[in-house]
Length: 368
Ligand SMILES: [Zn+2]
Ligand SMILES: [Zn+2]
Image (cartoon, rainbow, N blue to C red; front, top):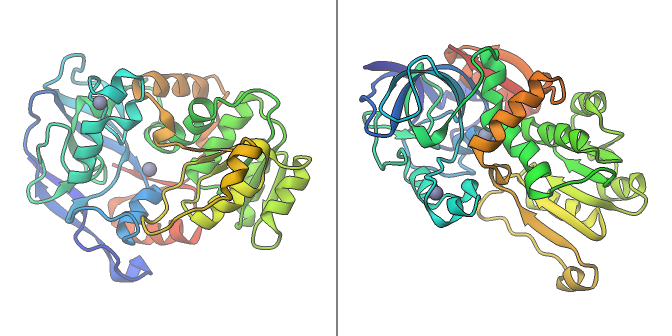
């Protein structure tokens, strides 16, 4: 079938993207699903910083590629057991094969065939279903239809508004998962969150849910700090005006027990590490450019029992975690709808990525 979608053919074009137009809306041939795959009609796809990182070249991927990975859709045709037309799914941006060693250990976010397929720009099977264009993280949600592996799909309640449902596959799973899975944060633990995009604010919602206290939110955009306070941050720090490390240490009586870095910047990660107290844990969630490195005084790991832990996809098992987070949202315990800034159309994508880069939006969601 012919689909309409936004293709990136060249990374690193100059901003503003409204002028350089790195994403071009094209008509492409989409092959039917193979064994274990689904054809879905995309209902909504969020714009994530990881898409922007491909566009600006800081997260290099094979070109050309049809971007978009935070998606929800309705199954039109299934070649996979357990899925039928009419099912509504959220897409996870790492397919979980279920049988490799990390999957068998319950670490689906580290699925080895899933990571290899994402790097190659294919589906989990190794197939390309888009003619001449690579898949983005097994999803390619900036198009009206997609073929995905059933291992990328988690069935969700069909009554969720699509612009909310889309958020669970990336922002919510990554941010809430970093708190409840990677950190296993418990009530009363002092926490600081660096960066208040979709993932950082999801981590904040997770910290509130887990009963963390105090919760310090750090960013450079005043409107995001205001939103963080509304969502449960007990203190905020504008890192442009104040020394973030000093302020977090002051707000947590000498340093936070847990800090979360969601910006994807090694300097911010160093601040997050320095803002922990003795025995503290730094969770790193953002994806820095591959050339960046991070150093710590080695003795502090030993003599101060500090920990640095990476968190990919919130250390999630999508089929376990997405239904839990959806249930918490529906019960009013995880207000992820507060992350939604605007809904847009395919032709608005380039301008919308300018807004994301400028920090003037949290989550913009492409609706079909
Ligand atoms: Zn994402
Ligand atoms: Zn696996």
